[in-house]
Image 1 (tube, rainbow, N blue to C red):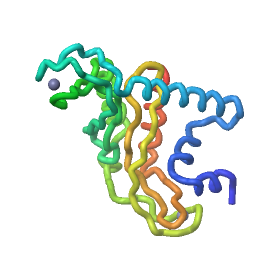
Image 2 (cartoon, rainbow, N blue to C red):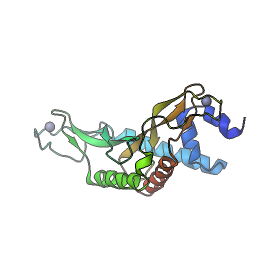
Image 3 (spheres, rainbow, N blue to C red):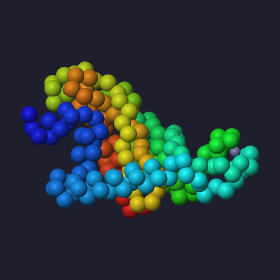
Image 4 (cartoon, helix red, strand yellow):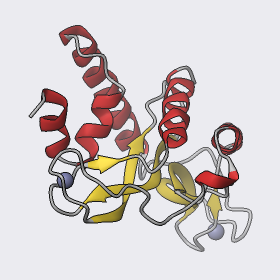
Length: 191
Ligand SMILES: [Zn+2]
Ligand SMILES: [Zn+2]
């Protein structure tokens, strides 16, 4: 078994993250450092007071940052949702998303659509042969892919891809999904 295939067997997110990493030790520790900073920035924000002084709906002054899931409406049905930090009123539940994050979601939708064609929109498993374990027993899985950034409150995107029920190897349903995710990750590295 090749090294890449052995890595695939380790499981879902590991193999996805590996795709985007250069294999040198330096790149690896840079990536880990950026990921750690990114996660600790998000954790610090959660449950702290947001920049919304008063809720427009109920006038409460307790509007706190929280993680929110926001459905993604694109031409590719496999891109399900985006997780981000928004502000939520503790009294009435009204949700607020900053202008920067609204723009980042708009950019994300535009980018996903630019890689999408009508033929690659299927949510049924499209892979039928596992070249890791030679099984043909496939199912769908929702993957969370992180979008590491400098300042954005966008955290990750959930996408539906195919996985082998025998060995858990994950395969992109379509190459355009992989290209769109790579492009998105590069985009977020600069914002
Ligand atoms: Zn409120
Ligand atoms: Zn397999």
